Image (cartoon, rainbow, N blue to C red):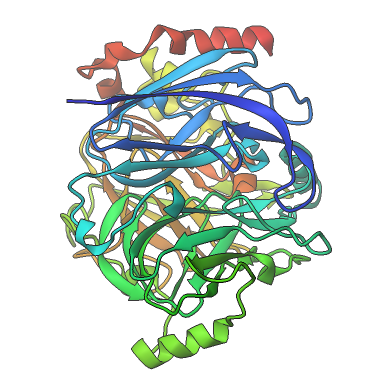
Length: 507
Ligand code: C2O
């Protein structure tokens, strides 16, 4: 039995000054993004009215529900020119999809060009009334979702043009926690406050909604348990800090067991590879115990480090330590995969990134529409669409490596989670590796596995939005015949079919 949630939602241009600098931005219902919530098994109907008017930013749009598998609903996944045509300005589109068995922490963002960097992004949480980890925490609500974002003072389109000219990824002006931050030389904007009551245990859902930056997250004087990676429950792991790449999510359980006071939440921003003018230490928020004076914390991260060292030998969490709680183990076990795909990435020139020598470029007609019209083999797509066919139910192993140019590239696969059998660090592990939908890849390469059990066209791309726009992507056409003949292929809705004619009529 599904409960239907209807969210009425507008994408509008409004000026905001999250770090004290006022600029036009794209808002998804609110800043820094409306929180969409539902329960396991629900079907979401999300009404998007495109009321974008500012000519300095994209005025068409499409929205991706990051991490949702969209099983049999690949028309609702969102990526422009893979799964749909963009929604032109003035038009309305309703995204409809069941979340099926998925639970946990997700987010959504524009999936047209680099548009989400202008602010079109928010969080999506699927609650599980029977959460296996429920006994670990007392409180889990809108106030326990923590967003980490990078923020630019110039519109993304202009920054992308600059990237193409000089080859340097644009450096964010500030980092935001829950939509608040400070930039170097800017005003002392009050920090975001996260409130806790002493003695309670909180499930914080930490979401990196950045277009570029990774963050190292910690809370002074507190350790916590990591219980979720990208919607997948983990065996609880106690730590004091972790690195979180663009588009990744972690749930942590924090026991508010320290003296009533104020403590710094820290998320220094890493934008490796750029000669940064960024003040890394300016990405902070306040963890405030109820009853504490209204003032800034005086805690130091050194104190937190000492505390952790005393307690546990003190380390930052490494991804390979995370074990999947339910049904652990990579598909195919340690045996050979059915389909091994080597993906070698690099850069072909200023603002151009490639995989296996091809810089991805969007087709005119979305991949899904081409498949519905009969495209079945790789040769049915143009070279620059870099489309790789997957057979139904095969075990796919991706070996991703390349010249990373000093940057950890967060690779995201749509339509799936995957097992990270070999991550940036740690041993090769087929038995209980971390499972997630975004993995950091550096020069050493990583190996991931998934089963091709979800017919649809699915993007695999670097979630640094500058790199996606620069071509660092491939598309998997998973079981094209299954997309056409599946039990619900007839649900491709008429409004979806109208998007391309409407978009091209206006463009
Ligand atoms: Cu969160 Cu293709 O993206």
